[in-house]
Image (cartoon, rainbow, N blue to C red):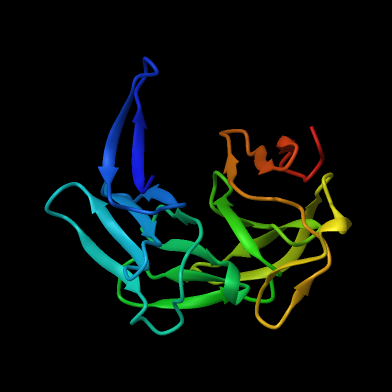
Amino acid sequence: ARRLTRIDKDDKLSTYFENIQSGGLGFDPKGRMIANDNTPGKQGIYVVRPKGAETTLVDRKTQGFMGANDLVVDKKGGVYFTQPEQANVGYILPDGKGMKIVAENVTRPNGITLSPDEKILYVNDSRGEYLLAYDVQADGSVTNRRNFAKYDQINTSAAGGDVGPGLRYSVTSCADGLAVDNEGRVYNAGCTGIQVYSPQGRHL
């Protein structure tokens, strides 16, 4: 529908923002809403609220950016985002001046989030068998890639399908949106519902 919907504390729905095709939202330390927009002809990541503060963080003119799927904003104001077709994860610097690729060779990165202390970056792989974790460094880069948890919804009958950077996929996990709670539990939205993992990667 190309709009953002607001749900208030009484479950009342209203249109918050129109003419945007977004799959990733976040708020920076200044309270500004940051969103990706994949509307044809306007692919990028933008500050969209409050009114008057709108600005472009990255778009198709930015080297390394081809189109974001999901994002998460850190406490410094930096933005991690997934690029499924490029099989990588990007990071927009906190000053908003430029970006860098921080993780590569993720079959099809999708949902993304940070641990409550922001020491760990989690990345869902919708065409892989594992939810991935990385250690976050002071400059926003990530190290120590590891398999955090194995999905329990692997489907090998869906081989092929989407075509990534020169790849045909062998499995699908449907792994999509990610979130964490205050206790560090990780929530993964997948084909068969919401899967929850402990901070140690154990299924709950």
